[in-house]
Length: 267
Length: 179
Image (tube, rainbow over all chains, first blue to last red; front, side):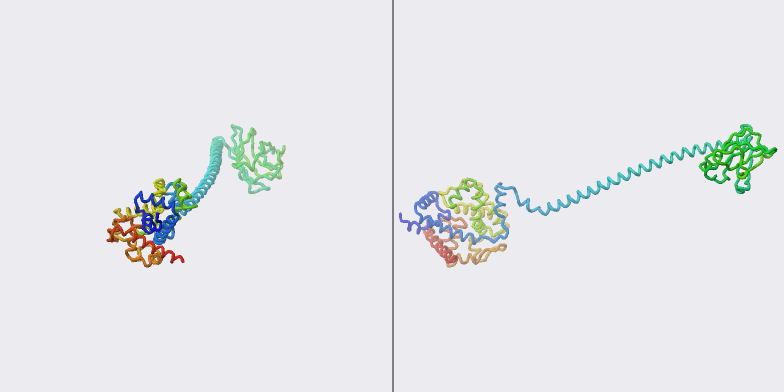
């Protein structure tokens, strides 16, 4: 075989162009295997076409590349989709964090708010109890006041004003005496609070001769808001006096400490 | 690893071998497609599709029926020509010269992509217009000998030898360029 003539025929150029028949192609393939000159010639022709086609390629700055191709042939998950929204995922991450922080802050706020509301409810409940207690006490107080008022309005009541004496000229008191019920109500609002360790003692007096009889003590004087004290008085009293005595009272009145005194008007 | 071995591995679906072939021939394929479609982005897109097609049809390549490059060159040409025959492309560009390749050279063509026009000129230096047309028709456009002979108005029997002398001049220019 004349290799040079074969090469010079131009068949190898058409072989590279892909313009030969299948039979011709197989022939060239066999000759190329057999004759290295032919193989080299084919490669040289191909190299010239490669150079030409490469030079005709556009200059692409950011090629899609093999990774994009891998995606197209299913050899790779679509990384471009993962890469492109990277900034977006950042944004959504920021939004996520912001939402989480807001939610946390909101929950904390609700928690403290509900805590505060609970304690406020507790306070209101306590206040309520106090008010109920006060209403209860006020009702009691009203009832006792009404009883007291009824008592001193009784037609059998004798009212004896007691005037201030030397020790305490500004002091005064009133005795409401129901002879039938043998009871006296002492209104001691006009007396000063007794000093510690002392107590007021109420005396029923006979005038001639002067005979004092104790009818009782004004105990818990300072803490009694109304300063009205009910005492039993079975005596035929002609006058009433109030003296300041040591705690527990005395058998006889200390006349130097006579605060108020008043005589029963003979009717 | 030589080309034959790479191609064998590629045909056994070796993705590494395929990547090497891709690196070797991507620019060539893109260049061929670009010469026809004249749009950088479209050329790249089609070139990617061409390689996907190559991968999916790797079994249909038979080394005894031609060079590997010849095989993929044919697939690329067909893909590019299919594209410009598609309706959408016709709407885009109506005036396609019969000789795409010459067009690039003459007009320093393509509005949207820079082609190495200087490199092309060097490669095609001293080649006659008929030679450039011949190469363009046979290698880029996929004309048969008969079609090329008719297009160039030359006897069918002279296509082979004329083409050989044209390629020889091209090879000479490459040698000059690289020395």
